[in-house]
Image 1: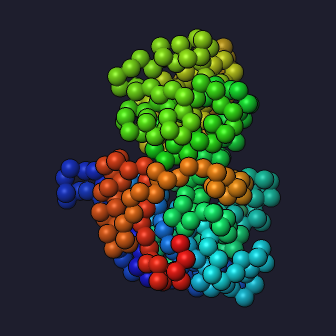
Image 2 (image 1 turned 90 degrees about the vertical axis):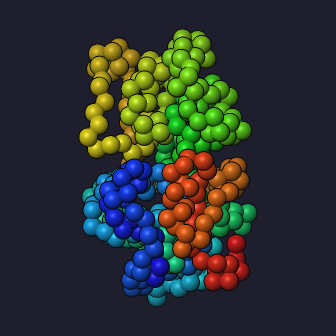
Length: 356
Ligand SMILES: [Zn+2]
Ligand SMILES: [Zn+2]
């Protein structure tokens, strides 16, 4: 089956053509349909900010590496025991690319994200079909299109970020980074009753988008004095919750200074594995009692993300759609940063049974 994959390891932005990472469409075997599995004809798979990191070999260097974990589609086949949760052939669905086994110690201990078998069903979704365990699959509400449905996974990340902030209604919140996760997080935080909701982002279009979706203030960290503006917006007290969705090492340090005493800083992105954040323990952990945390994946967040989807404003996320065969162009478009999200259409309408 046709699958979008990393075909050469390397930085996708490397100016040296010979060293640059490469994305292509390859044939990969379709996994067997196990008794509890669901085969989904993929409608849409969105490019994630983490995908270029996979091209750099963050999770392994054996090519081809199949891509795609933000997926929607239509159920094509069910294993003999699948469907106990009510799933049927023809259902419009989205899902979690990870299967939490339920049997290992972390799963038994309420920490699915550390499941010891988390990779068993992690299969590329930027493909004609994806085969998942039924526990990974969620039927989409009627009011959510398949195009919007592929945003279930990034929405689950925004929900998980919200969980980790332990926000209280009325808390002051700053979000750094106006990519898709940052934008969805702004929408989620606005619904949570955040105040002084501020988007910190160098690209003007992204600041504008955040404003349209609930951010009250924006800061351009490249041309404005971030610390002074934050002081002004929070009466010199800082933000109770500071979220990084940028993954930018340049941004990470300054965020500690934006946090209020007793505040929480969530590093909600992927960071270079060799980057170390300088941290004055006396200032930030003793005197300010900050809580610093991060987000790996989004356990226990999908049911709530599914409830939220119909209420989020997703129109701006679904403008750039490329056919599967043009995956390389889609990644180029992603790297320009011009689109809030770039989405790959993995099958045409006819192959999806006319569902949308
Ligand atoms: Zn993602
Ligand atoms: Zn497990």
